[in-house]
Length: 323
Image (cartoon, rainbow, N blue to C red; front, side, top):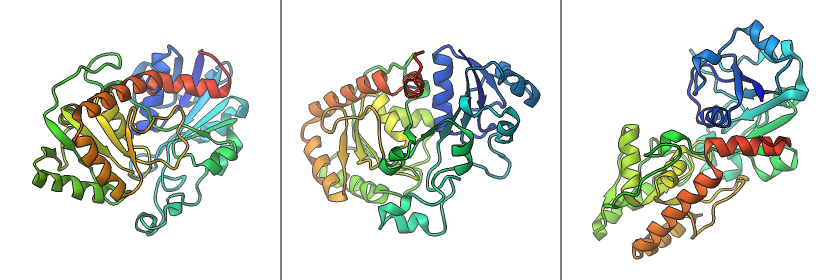
């Protein structure tokens, strides 16, 4: 299979990275308009070459990227020159609004009214006009009803301690790991404050922030429980680091559509309120063998359904093509 890819230029985006990894893992022939997010340098072509390759490719993937100074975003203008809507698949990784930038006061106000997390414009109307399939990371039930296809984050190879989506079992020496880059969203501040207080009850708690990626991953792997909560979007990279490293993942309950879901108490633990979180984490800390079991089951479920490779297979399943 041959595909043309119009990705965000150089600027890292986690959804873009997992999808692009999935292209290569499924042995798909890639012709990209730009470098970045795992695109091989040998697979980057000029605008004119991309337009030419679009004539005989099977699909054209346009992957969202946040526009910021120094990062112009994907080359959307190529779609007008290509003019092949019947081949176009749009991957929308935005949060807060279709631009990825929150509205004034949206972050603060959404703490008290969850419906405000879905800011307007929420759907990129220009992309609904220029694509046949529209996939979205933060896809609410009303979006699915309108024909948008849910596509949350997935794990990538970098999340695992071994090769080819594998992680070794390591000794657990940390009871709870709770670390966030920022604590403005979801139940991050509330869970962090409670977890740091658990040390007064005799539990070994690791918190703080600013860890490099490998240290962060190692601390997760050594923990019985690692905590996730909503960030700008409900799906966060932290979730996949937890499950990829055989750790019992505590996750704030999703309200978005989540294909091939995890099961509470079986392969992760979900909480809806801070009181729910407090009750559950104390209960699970009293049964650490159960934490290990859930961590291992979460790892199995992630490998089976939620790697970059599996994510791209899911995309093509929704398109109606087997790869």
